[in-house]
Length: 313
Image (cartoon, rainbow, N blue to C red):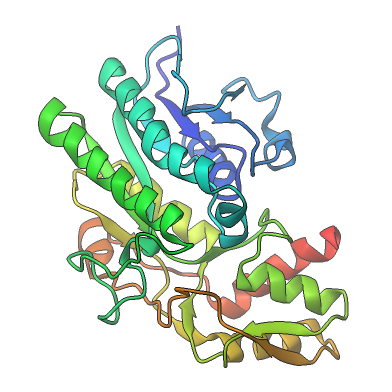
């Protein structure tokens, strides 16, 4: 019988989930990826099939989750995660954040496993403080079009802390800021894949609003390292994981134009409702508790991501 630790990763066929599968396999864990393939893809984990320490289960985590044998850790990453997805699938987004989190926490309790929740910088909404630290409670419109995602994640955090305090489940919460890298979907709807896809197709690059809104982009390998460290730490409160290197969307669009060497023009369209104006993580806690900070520069990460997208367009 194997003495290796076992982790269940919900949303394991997604962009982040698939990178997490690799990370834990490389660290010597047995990995079970669970996904209903609503926004995930088998293409993301195809290279892992056949690895004796890897298995895939197609399942919707809003239903009862059964996993035989011991589990040491559950990473709950199942959820649509881009505006284009959660506006198209509002009910599924709400259900996976509420019912899915409940089912995954129930499994953690039954297996006496540690539980790590993938939360998001969206819990801060359109923030009134900058940069955002973990003690900020946020500025979210619960009935706006983005509320289905923002409030699902806020509820998931409350449920996670409820299980921790009432049932004694070992829990961790990561608040993920904008992340990019290979295996992002071109039709994901977020700025980076949208800009790169448009540039590579020779189309105009669409910037919403005047482009003065800011984002902070973290390369996926950096993010996954931070999540791994958090999963192995004793820290219970939420932790921001992201890259504090902030840039305006207009400047970012110009970076993509230069990198792709395209003749694409940048055009402006109206800003969507409740689109955050500023976004930058305060990573003081991650530095202090996890000894973590991002290492991959944006220019380096964008080149790696572009190479991936060029094969997909």
